[in-house]
Image (tube, rainbow, N blue to C red; front, side, top):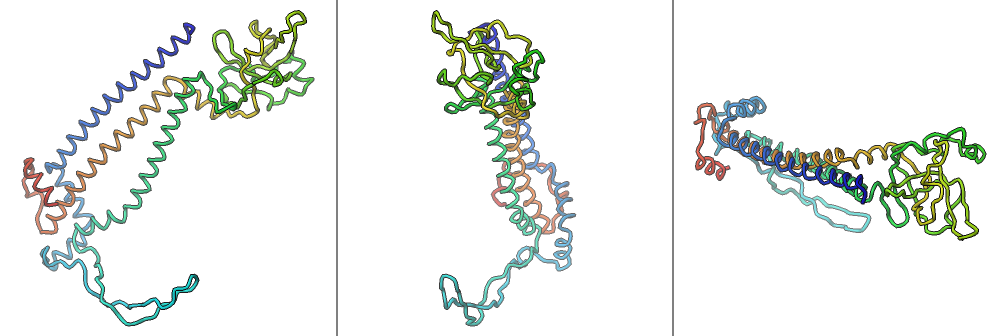
Length: 356
């Protein structure tokens, strides 16, 4: 392992430790906030605001109950009604026939007549939207986990990811982005078109080379340098030594005027893969960012933040729901919350929760 690789690994693991430490600190702070927010709600410190909101939202129901001077025990939640009664007389696969045999008495639910009923009815109606929201966040979390996995995989495998002999690699340099006018072979072989270039930071598809027969002149290959860096340049010369019988390969970047010293006489074992034609700049930029320490920190931070935030908000919302229903019952009973004791003991809160 070279000094540069060692330094990169140290930076990577230090970043992970920093992220974990930040996550723990953030989770603790947000948990403390949620804990005291829930206590604040349960002890009735927001009752006046909640009562005002409920009275404004359900003023028609409250007004009707006040006009009728109803008590909670007098409120009708349902009534019996006569409905047509049908009997199935034919049940074929494609035809179903029903016959009216009379009427039957069924229980018919009335429109909400109390604030508590109205709140529960709204919760039922909004249930499907909560399900949609949960599905959305689940998909979002899965995408974040996939991005995190891709980021770690590309970091561990040094900017490449293989499935069998097929792989994806990100390009870090611009040596294949333009065509140098001194490289006559590019123009002679018709390799001077934009589609023959590889844009810097692009994500490209590659195929592992398994035999010298895979080596073709003027195609683009990836080879390893002594520093274990994967370089993608064009093969411009194949030479077999008559004395040793060893075949050597010479490469050059399309933008370079001449070959680099370490790519003049490469052997087959130095060559890893061949560019197979696909490239995408947007995906490459995204993965390059995700490969960086700051990118990894950003994904982990986003994931941890969302989990902590959603969990805390869930329990805060649960506390609000319980307290709102308690206040709604008091309003239905004709009481004014502002006249109730502003602070409740733990025992009172517990008893109140049991009643709810």
